[in-house]
Amino acid sequence: MLTKDQKKNIVDGLAERFKRQKIAIFSDFHGVSVAKAQVLRRLLKKSDAEYKVAKKTLLDRALGKVGIKLKTKELQGEIGVTFAYVDEMAPAKTLSKFSRENETFKILGGILGDRILSGKEILAFAKLPGREALLAQLLGVLQSPMRGLATVLQGNIRNLVVVLNKIKDKR
Image 1 (cartoon, rainbow, N blue to C red):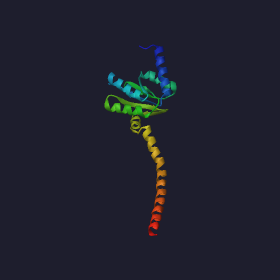
Image 2: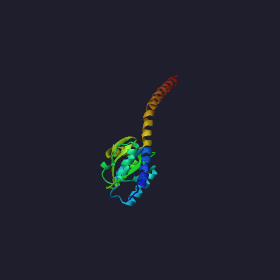
Image 3: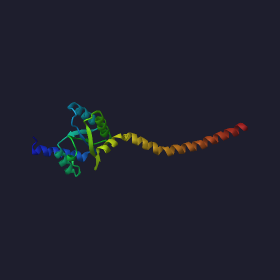
């Protein structure tokens, strides 16, 4: 049984994490073995994220403390929260892959910034390409018009050289 001071410390720690997070993902870990949970924690640690388990009432108090209107009591199962502080995509992808490999592990929803997302939205978010891939696509889109202009201008110069060579050959 936890004392009031211990509960207060847990709520304060969770509230601090909710303030710092870029994304928080709620999941139902019921039926996941301790060994698999440790593997998940190690995978999440690689992407600067952490997985915390707390009672729903303590989670609700922490969410209320930071002004997020989400009631974890409405979520089914035993709740664990993944907090990501650097990259939003990597933990979502890790949890999505883990839920596919472990049938009992379910993604229930999350918080992206101040927006509350459903489990389906988190799974859709996880399917998006990573930040680097999106930046590379954006760079390609931005370079495309310049590349096309350079090709057109180069074609005119090439045609001029061909014409001058033909004139030279005739003389």
